[in-house]
Image (cartoon, rainbow, N blue to C red; front, side, top):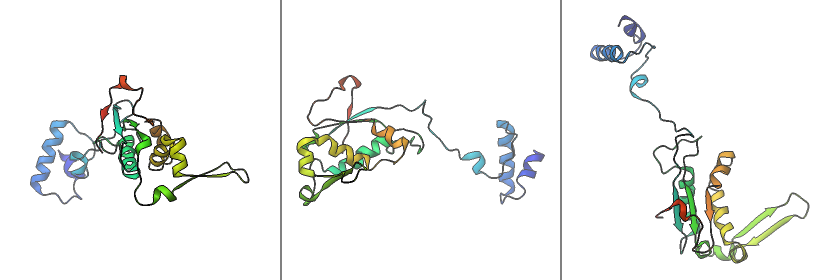
Amino acid sequence: MKSVGVALQGSTCRAAEFAFLGRFLAVTGHNRKIVSWCDIIMKSFLAKNETVEHNWRLVDADGEILGRMAVKIAMALMGKDKPIYTPHVDTGDFVIVVNAEKIRLTGDKADTKEYQRYSQYPGGQKIVSFGKMMETHPERVVELAVRRMLPKNKLGAKMLKKLKVYSGPDHNHAAQQPVKMEL
């Protein structure tokens, strides 16, 4: 106990707290230098890749607003709605989106929204309107909205692979028993 008093000399603890701290250290067998109460009481939890469990969620996009739905999906893919969220670990779930062709936008965005891509060659810029994209590839609209809300790094790319989007009401992930996600 002599070493405990020496370790805490600079601390503002009272005598009773010193006594409790000494008893605590004696019982738990700590032999490291303790500077404050935070060293003993507070511990951070960091999830590990091996221990994270990835569940499956199902989202019905029928009549949902694109941006609001994409926010909830991105949060589920990142795992931010779980208490074990750790920024550098993929703690999110798999998300299945059905009825992507029935999403909607607010205001006049359905008429003015455009999707742009560029091939890195001169004259390689392509601009596609929202209406044309919904006619040809409605699942890409949801994927692009969610992708832009995920981290822009390797972990974000890994999270995006857990997103499965289908334009109709059917999907081929029934074996995973997805749970319906409320938006």
